[in-house]
Image (cartoon, rainbow, N blue to C red; front, side):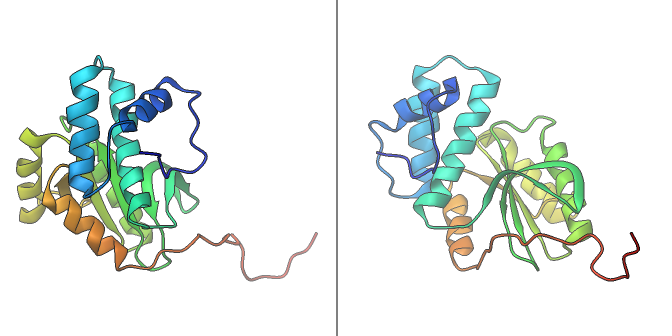
Amino acid sequence: MISKIPNFSERRKSDKIYSELLENIQFDRPSNFVNDVLIDEYVANYPSNSSINGKVFEYCIVECLMQMDITPFYYQATMSLIPNVNFDIVCYNEISPVVLSCKVSLRERWKQADLEGLAIKQVYRKSKVHLITAATNEQDRLQREIESGTIHGLDSCVLAQSTDFDKLLTDLTKQTFTVAKMIDPIPKGTLYN
């Protein structure tokens, strides 16, 4: 399969590995794609490396968005009204942007996604923040905490290899996302220079 990720290069080790992983893969459903690439190919054939693990997982999620025509979106995005936060994926619209935080394993990493969610919800009250993970043993517990109201910054914790991930992406195909407009920090006032 040829990746639909634009401007993809094989300069970094993770890029090269991802390209190799796609050689014998076909895209049918997002959850199957993630399972085939991440579990059946990557985990089975490459040594674990935390930075490459995360990058390959992010590429899988980005590839799923591209394959399902969920565009435009921003990858590794910062937002001018939310300083000091780097979001994995932002599907932007002016009223309710959707953030996808990609974490291969959760351990304590879910707390970072929760803080990012709290930050964006201060500016965009109707935003949605979904934590996407490959951690089968931790996802259920975290989803229960979100549903009970213990965690406020996340709207869901979704296992990327599950039908819930397919449903999330299908729901995103029904939304309209746009390219962000430049924001004038001082839209009104008389300038004396």
